[in-house]
Image (cartoon, rainbow, N blue to C red; front, top):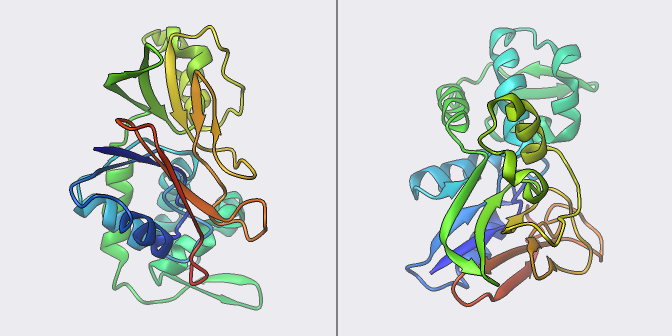
Length: 240
C-alpha cells in the first residue's frame, strides 16, 4: 500500500516512529521538505534515497540546491550574506547535520570536518532530480491523485505550458493558495502547516501538520494511505 508523508523537516526519529506503525511492505512517498529545521536532515535524505522512495521537490530542497552550492564554493569562509535566507529557514540545522559548520559568537564557520562533504554534494545532485509532481493511476472521488509540495490544483491545466513553466514551478514550491473545488485532480500536498491535524476535503489533502513546530496545535507527523484513505498521525519525537 502507498503511504504519502507530510513535511518531515529533518525529524528523522519521528519519521521512523511513524514508519514502524505501517505494514512492513508499504511504499513510502514524500511531498518534499525532507530537510531543515529538525536535527537530522542528512539522515532523512539518506533514508529516502536508500529505500528508493518517491519524493517531490519542496521549497526547502530548492533552497538547499541553490544556497548549498554557494556554500560549497565559499566553504572556507562561507558567504553567509548570500545564503542567510536558507540559514535562517533551517539551513543552519541542515549543515550542522552534515557536520559542515560550527557556530561561534553567532557566526557560521566551516567546521573543517569533511567526513560528509561528498555526501552533501551528492545529495544536492540527487535533489536536482526530484519532480515537481507525481501522478498516480488511482483515483479519489473520481479525481486523479497528484502529489506535489504545494497546492497545484489551480494551475494543473497549465502543467505542460512551456510559457508558464516558471510560474508553475513557483506554484509547486511556494504558493499557499486554496484549491478550487472545480479542479479535476485530488491534490495531496504539504508546505503550509495546519493546526489540529490534516486538512482533508473532497478535492485535496494538506498533510503538513507542522512536525517541527513545538506547540500544542502542531508538532505532529502525518501520513495518508491512498488505498484505504486512512490518516495516521503521531506526535513529534522530542529528540528531533
